[in-house]
Length: 279
Ligand SMILES: [Zn+2]
Ligand SMILES: [Zn+2]
Image (tube, rainbow, N blue to C red; front, side, top):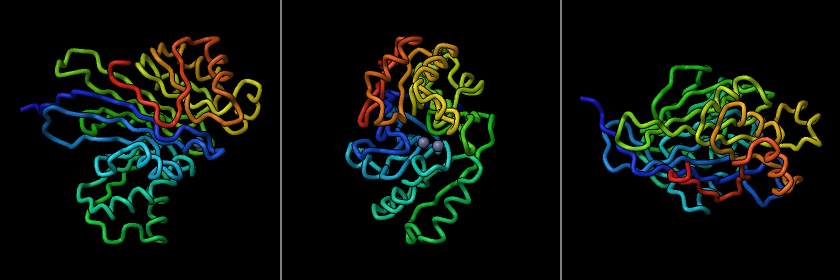
């Protein structure tokens, strides 16, 4: 019998939206996709996290996330502003007496990273739950997390980094086109980021710089707001949200630059929610 999955609601929430150097007002990269299901069989769903930078546990608590509902964490890459919150999330889950397995996915290096942190810090030593760590290969066959289908694309950054393309059913009708959410992590413009974003309902793209600092964007392998918007247009994405933005650049400047080539764009702030009806 086919497993029955009916998704009643899907919500994207931004917990941290700052680039690697923060003024303390916004948290580091962390966002979540929440599924609420009327009926389901098979793997559990709940909250899927995308990245968990330093202080993620604090931001999750501030915005009312239930840590025990986190089923899986997809890490784009092992820079501290995307992964350093992992240990404290796991520690807190241990304190909360979690029993359900936790899945962690990321590029090559995530096992060594977490293995070292665990060895040195003995994180959640008495935990009653298993951690399933998976190092993904680029273009691995898509895999399922609850009602979500996930695929990793190799981005162009200073270390191995994956963008994630996530597809979720719109409802119980299998023939209805799926909702596509694409998240770049950190990258400079590349053919793979355009593939990642192809026909996405929502493209969440980093925009660390503006065009005035494009030389720095090339040096550090990041994108400008204009470049993110160009990728959205090239890929025929429907909606663009810019994240991983710097406090050096105002929201207004960032939007104005992106709107030169792509009109349906906004800049993320911590606490921003996008509901299924907006996609
Ligand atoms: Zn970053
Ligand atoms: Zn990075």
